[in-house]
Amino acid sequence: MYLAITLEQPLLVEGEAGVGKTEVAKALAGASGARLIRLQCHEGIDLHHALYDWDYPRQLLHLRAGAESDEPLYSERFLLRRPLLEALQASEPVVLLIDEIDRADDEFEAFLLEVLSDFQVSIPELGTVSAERRPLVVITSNRTRELHDALKRRCLYHWIDYPAPEREAEIVRARLPGVPDAIAERVCIAVARLRGEELYKLPGVGETIAWAQALLALEDASLEDTLGVALKVREDIEQVRETGVLQGA
Image (cartoon, rainbow, N blue to C red; front, side):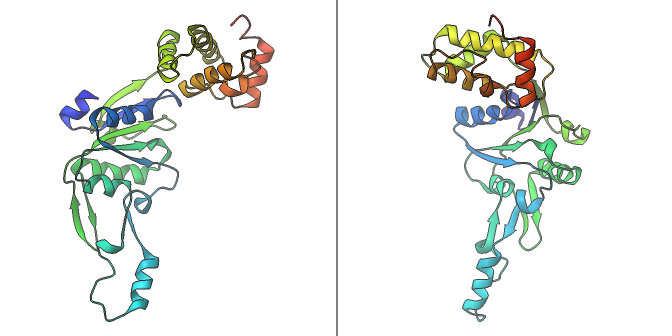
């Protein structure tokens, strides 16, 4: 994170779902006092979702209100700024989070590469828009597909793995002040066991925190009673109960 700020390079963070990749951008924004702007990637995302679009209903009302107006339809007044353009035009410090880039297709990744190269974009109706001040960029990927080398070359890279049980217990205590050490350690040991199993969906750090909350809310509940807090797939729950992997935890 320090190098990303100093070298003004995007930071590409990869890791399994739930390890805290998005929290990197949130922590960076919180520590630097910058505004967090988030672009959530998804299948089919294009520049109209990511960069800009035009407010067609307002343009239509403008036309109906009076054709004699000299104000052009394609002006700043009718521009809808999406996250990328908002980050480029921001006058204050900004952290731009491009979340789950691996969900987008190759065409969008190529477009993003162009934006990150020069931190400027071209809007045909308005011209070229350049960043007033370069945003800090954090890109996350769950590695559901391999990203192009060209994108990786423009980024610093960091892999986040699941934390060790001791470290995860520290996270639980930080997020749940006052949680008994016994509960924090018990839950983290149980989660570590679950992550050693062949499951459809391994629990992330968020599930660990939620599991500790559940045990606080239900004083006499066992880990198996609250298994649905940590595991979200029926077959995973059945497998864990059948194998008895949590016995003694």
